[in-house]
Image (cartoon, rainbow, N blue to C red; front, side, top):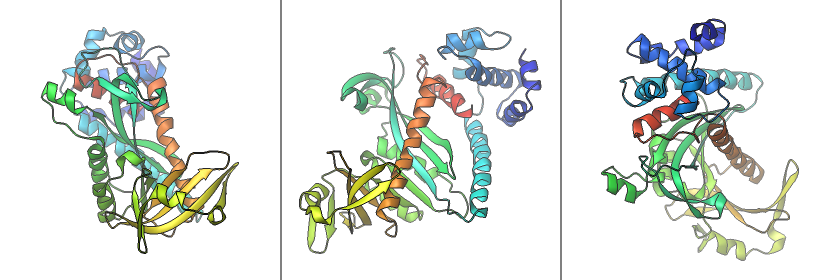
Length: 349
């Protein structure tokens, strides 16, 4: 049945065949084909039990688990092949945009998401604060990911499991913070030729090291900052919330984006790390909460900065699809390698 599915779909056959060289033998490659197809066609819970039932020609879930956790196939080569294929598609979309005379900036979006879990013996599982559940502690895994958006095309660049320091100490693993994971992803990123890269993050990830890396690699940064972040202008060095509190209403401008309007005040100054930024103090008309954005591209207008930052919603779309459709939310495995290899497969689909 597997051969019939693949042979009758030229695009699927061509896609899967690109990964053949990452596997040491035909059996491993066949397992890989089974797993990807099962993820694509199965509508139930995409855990090992469900996927083993959906696999064409049938495979016991123990056999599937051994493929994920025990067999020696080159996961890094699989990742590299995936990136090569995605970059090829992104370049085509980029060239089409450039032929129309339109600028096509490349956005690298960094964020994290909590995946609820029930198994307490899974590697990396811990209690994490859930923002969507009013900061309640939820048992699960937190995945930090980088997403690339270019010319309307979006794809996951990289991802890594964040493990709490207490859990790392308990299991003898090296602790790496979320900002450090983001730094490593950005450091490894190879930009598309003849493009300007904009890195975008939430306030949690804005660090002196990350901004320095962006400057070294000639990337621009657009992101949120916390309300207590200091911004120096002229002889004044105030927290951004203090700048907002001191603003007369007459200084606020209105910016319209589609059907939404924002009250905005922009100031060009320096952060404490001496990085020059344009700071945007803004809130939606009708809303009460103020937001603080910074951009190291000082030439961008307030409207462009807000519009660019809204592109970050693409990473939320990815997390929603990954958890609800592609199996990120369904796995229940203890072994770290098996978990990471399971998570890798949906990103191929």
